[in-house]
Length: 413
Image (spheres, rainbow, N blue to C red):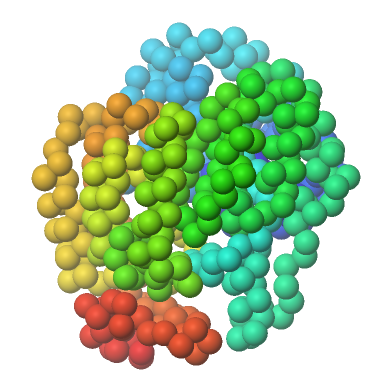
């Protein structure tokens, strides 16, 4: 399950097809999270059991189509089920009796969570939303892209945090919690919820994960984090190339790399699981191989959970044929240089299959660029957007990505 920045419950962490809107009967203000899971999700589970395509699963369907391992495959694996041997593994799954008896109803508890803490953030990534970045929200309002700042996140209401933590404490088999921001390390609720979990005496049996944008270092967090059974660290970066500064404004790639190396060193000492979290766009995909190089050098997997859908004009599918071919060529060269065992890696957090997992991620973008329909008609929208941002940031996409100059000029830059 997932709780969004506004307190809205959704069926899983990959249900991001559209920005979750406030709905009275599915918000923590009005419903207990366990009640939502057991009762409100009943019709959704019934649809899955009946084999009906679900709109909420659109992201995973697209990911599966291009050979990337989707969130639904990873969750199926936790039930012992795989897509390539579906019938056999379903029949041997320890969850089979629950599936057979169920009409969507369940007495089970939600044991795997994503918690969106709010929009405290010092970054203004161009693909982000005001509800996930306070810095971007302020900028958007200044340049007229939004009229009002987003409302306060649910984590700023102590009574809602209490309600949520109390619900987690009732889940005996609570297994994993992943925290997202904003930037988690500057969000007060991150430490607050961790402290509460420790106070409840459940930290030692729960694994936690969090994602950082590699602009923050916090020595004080290590003693708190060490009290949990396991720590998974997600490190957000697009590539190790100057275009990263433009996309993840106002970060500087040299400082990001230095901070990244500090996290890697500390994470290896503490035996943390670490991954790079990446959101490839049409501006970064030409240099995505620089991230794969860095990740491979340091033995860390790369996870791009889905193909970006919004803003539509940032999709890699907006690129014309010649630019796609350049990106495909670089990715194929990387794959050929680092050939692995060509196995399907579903457990992307297995440190023993890092090279194969990176190859798999790279191949999924080759497949995407080769097969996704062209959307070059969105290029003028891209130009309009970046020019609007640049009017406030006093930078230029051409300076960071000179190889795109002709393409962007022809679209009105």
